[in-house]
Length: 196
Image (spheres, rainbow, N blue to C red):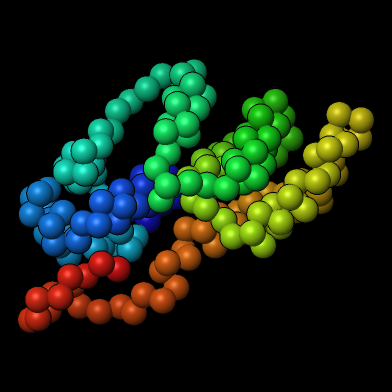
């Protein structure tokens, strides 16, 4: 799965779990098979737009396109009404927000557009996927050199450390609940739900 859609599928999974809805129930509501939903949530299948819309609407959510310039206001509104299951620690929100503001001002220092886009995508995921206290400490430590940015711009090595730390934390947050997933057949003869 690409990281461009990963945060959407993670939010859909969180919404399903917050509603204490099984994959089987979501399957019945959305018209998608349970195995399809399971594969989307585990990241073994890239969902099509139609599937994303069907799942979202079954969870009383809506996928919409919004002008890019309105995204800070939209994020602020969404962050202010987050449900308890979706709460990202305030330290993490502040650090990620700080990195996003820094990135908006200094995008060009990251080198090529691919690296810049990957960094931006990583930050977008870290807005929604909670980190552990140790991971937040790692993020604080990695971003500490930004305190002196205006008076003493960072070296390429320091920038690389920040980018690497953000990427590693993103990977840890994204794959956290997948580490214990045991691959198994999408179909079974018993009646158990696959709430992977």
